Image (cartoon, rainbow, N blue to C red; front, side):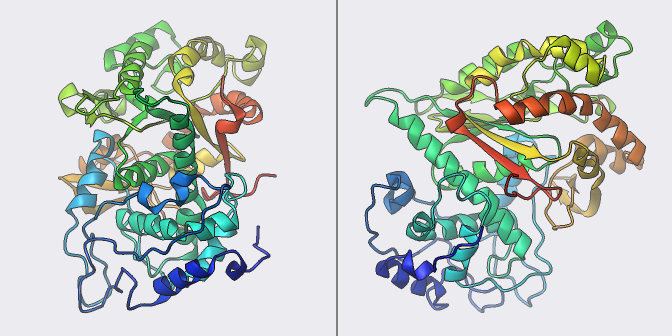
Amino acid sequence: MAVAISSSSLISSAWQATLQHYNNPRDYPLIPPCHSNPISNSFNFKRQQRPSSSKFNDHVLSSSSSKLSPIPTLFSFSGCGCSWIQDNSMVHDYATSYGGDSNKCYSLPTTKTVDVSSVSDLFEFICSGPLVDKIGITPERVGLSIDKWLLYGSQLCRLFQLNELKLTIPQKARLYHYYIPVFMWCEDQIALHNSKSHDGDDVPPLVIGFSAPQGCGKTTLVFALDYLFKTTKRKSATVSIDDFYLTAQGQTELRENNPGNALLEYRGNSGSHDLQLSVETLEALTKLTKEGMKMKVPRYDKSAYSGRGDRADSSTWPEVEGPLTVILFEGWMLGFKPLPADVVKAVDPQLEIVNKNLEAYYDVWDKYIDAWVVIKIQDPSYVYRWRLQVCISDNNKTNGVFAAFVYTNLGFVFWFEQAEIAMRQAGKAGMSDEEVNDFVSRYLPAYKAYLPTLYAEGPSGSDPDRVLAIDIDEERNPILAN
């Protein structure tokens, strides 16, 4: 919605001085790409004393409670006669080690840019986003915390290889209408979670579940949030339901025990996960409450056995160290509830055994989740289009592995399976449109059966006040719910 009241009436005179500081190119911490001097390796935002207000959470408003670590300048921008970025090792290492999976490449293009507006214009842009009312970010709160919005935007631009002084409107929307508001909501949830503990207690990490269909961008969202947590000195861990798929042998047994059931022929639907491994992992992660405590997090190799997949060797699993503040747990079917047998049979008779398997999943997964982000789509058929939007770039490599990019028409980049990359490298054709349709068709019955209940009732056992439902359009952008 549009903000009817002017920003100047919502931001204190002290903050007006701060805005002037940000809009002054002599003080702005980021020098344009073709400037003769490289930018500073740390952020030196000047801060003004902010008025206190009982309406806002201290952890959001206090500049001392969220200290961003110095981040080296990263990436090279093309098209300007000089390189203003000297080293790309940090984000390169982060992107390739995220989740221990170097086969995913996260990036955003820098073409077709427009000049970034002034901070006061950015204030209005932030307040016009579809999520601000839903998560309680009032215009006043935006004004009081505008420095954090700028800092978080700066961090994400570095992560996604964007020039923050030249963003497209869709890029600005993705950062300031989506990723950063969700991050601030997560920060609020952490504060609420910590407020319930007593002094001296070991506070277990907050577990936030992210439920969203395949291809809608949840992995990239979690990737961005995890990066922001790390830059704000919070220890976080990421885990996906994909990490708990059965081994190759287990998949074979599942397929043999359910002959003719296309929904269980490949990994994906309920019944194809190692629930015991997931329990052990989630239990161990929630106990990482002390300095020095460490554990390895399972990962799955989707390229093994010609794409059928197998559990990755434990020597390749990433290690996380406590004390953890937050665990980001994502999956396409998180929060699904079993339904009466006649309901699922009406959708697809093969779904009956899948529905029976789903009964065990609440005790294994959903009960561990304290807060939820549910990304809602208007039509499950969007998944077909998202999976078809694949392009392999032979000019991009990560440690010898070809980077795979999934493009939307907004220019945002997501991810695709290593199996597809391996086939391309071997000179074999990737998935045809028919093969992609077949792949997605094995998930579509579950979407049709379970998404309406998830959207209407929320995840199993969840607190409605701790569920952030985000409606997205066919381009993966947040929209106002009907």
